[in-house]
Amino acid sequence: MHTAIMVKTYPAEINMDRDQLVKCIDACFDCAQACTACADSCLSEQMVTDLRKCIRTNLDCADVCEATTHVLSRHTGYDANISRAVLEACVQACKSCADECENHAAMKHCQVCAEACRGCEQACRQTLAGMAA
Amino acid sequence: MHTAIMVKTYPAEINMDRDQLVKCIDACFDCAQACTACADSCLSEQMVTDLRKCIRTNLDCADVCEATTHVLSRHTGYDANISRAVLEACVQACKSCADECENHAAMKHCQVCAEACRGCEQACRQTLAGMAA
Amino acid sequence: MHTAIMVKTYPAEINMDRDQLVKCIDACFDCAQACTACADSCLSEQMVTDLRKCIRTNLDCADVCEATTHVLSRHTGYDANISRAVLEACVQACKSCADECENHAAMKHCQVCAEACRGCEQACRQTLAGMAA
Amino acid sequence: MHTAIMVKTYPAEINMDRDQLVKCIDACFDCAQACTACADSCLSEQMVTDLRKCIRTNLDCADVCEATTHVLSRHTGYDANISRAVLEACVQACKSCADECENHAAMKHCQVCAEACRGCEQACRQTLAGMAA
Image (tube, rainbow over all chains, first blue to last red; front, side):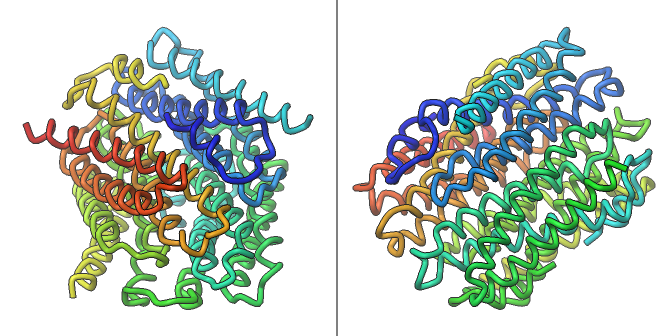
C-alpha cells in the first residue's frame, strides 16, 4: 500500500496524527476486503441458510469501512463532525460483524474476517480517541 | 426508481415502516448523486480555490449517503445498531454539506445540492425516529 | 431525483447530450438499488442455495452501475476513453444480471430487477451510441 | 492485508490463479486509496486550477478500481464476461490516470499515484492474460 507516502506528501496541514491515520486507513481497506470476501465465502458454504445474517452484516460492514476510509483519506476542508460520526458508525459495524463472524469461527474465513473487523474496530476507536485529545 | 416495488416484494418481514424506508432510500441516492455532481460543478467554477471545502464535503457526503442507502436496502439479518449508527452518520454528513453549500447558494448547483442534502437529512431523521418508536 | 437540474446547472460544456445523460445516470442508480435489494431478497428466500449465482451477479452489477453513474455525473476534464470503457462494462454487467434474474422471474423481485437491468443496459448502449456519433 | 488468507480459505473452486488474484485485488485497493488521496492533495495545491482534470480522473479511477476489486473478491457463480469487462475498464482508467499524473510528477503525490496506477494497470493486464489462457 502507498498509504503512508500519500499521507506524507499531502501538501498542507493534517488535523490528526499521521501515523495513526495511515494505520486506520489501511485497517478500513483491509476490513472492507475481508468482509467482501467473507460474504462470498459464506455464500458458497453448504450451510448458507445458517449464514444469512453473516452475509448481510459482512456487506454492511464493507460499505461502512469503505466510506470511512475515503473520509479519512481526505484532509482538505476538514470537518471533525463528519469524521467522528463516520468513525463511530465504523466502530459499530465492525463490532457487529466481528461478533457475528465469531459465532462460527470454525469456518476459517469467518475467523480471519473477525480478526480484520476487530483490527479495524480498534484502529477506529484509537483514531476517535486521538481526535478527542 | 424501482425502490418501492423492490421493498414491496421483499419475501420476509421488514422491521421498519416500508413507506418511510422507500422515501429514505431514494433520498440517500438522490443526495449521493447531487453531491457527486456538485463536487464536479464546483471543480469547474472559476473560483474553485474558494470551493475546496465544499468539494471535499460533497465527496464525503456522497460516500456516506451511498453506504446508508445500501444498508437500508437490506432487511435480512437486521441489526438495529448498524442501521442507527449509519443513519446518524448520514444525518451529520448531510447537515454539514447542506450548511456548506448554503454558504454559496448563489451558485445554482450548490443551492440544489443543499436542497437534496436537507431532504436526505430529514428523511434519515424520520427513519431514526421511527426506529426509536 | 435532482439529476436533471444538476446536469442543467453544470457551469461549463458537457460533451454528451444532456437529456440522454440524465436518463443514463438515473438508470444506473435505479439498477444499483434494484440489484442491492434483489441480492438481499434472494438471500431471504427459502431456496437460497439455488440463488447463489443470482446474488453474486446482483452484487457485481450494483458495483459496476455505481461506478458508472459516478463517472457519468462528472464532466470536468472529460476523458472519452474512461467513459466508454466503463459504459461497456456496465452493459455487460447489466446484461449478465438480467439474463440471470430472468431465469427465475417467478420470484417477483428477480422479475423487477431484470427490468431495471434491461433498462440500464439499454440506457448505457444509447449513451455509447451517442458518443460514437 | 488479509487478502491472501481470505482467498486461500474460500471453500470452493476459483477459476483464476490464486496468487495472481491476490496481487490484483491488493493492487486495485492500493490504487483506489492513492487516487482518493491524490484527488484531495491536488485540491489543496495552490495551482488547483491547473489540476482539475487530474482530480476528476483520480476520482473516476478510484471508483473503477473499487468496483474491480469487489468483483475480483467474489468467486461464487463466476461470470468471465463480467470480470473481463470490468478488468478492461480498470486497465483504461488506470492508464488514463497514470498518464495524467505523470504530466505533473514534480508534485510528489502525483508521482506516487502514477506508480500505484501503473502497478494496478499491469496487475489487471496480467489477470486478463491469465483468463484468456
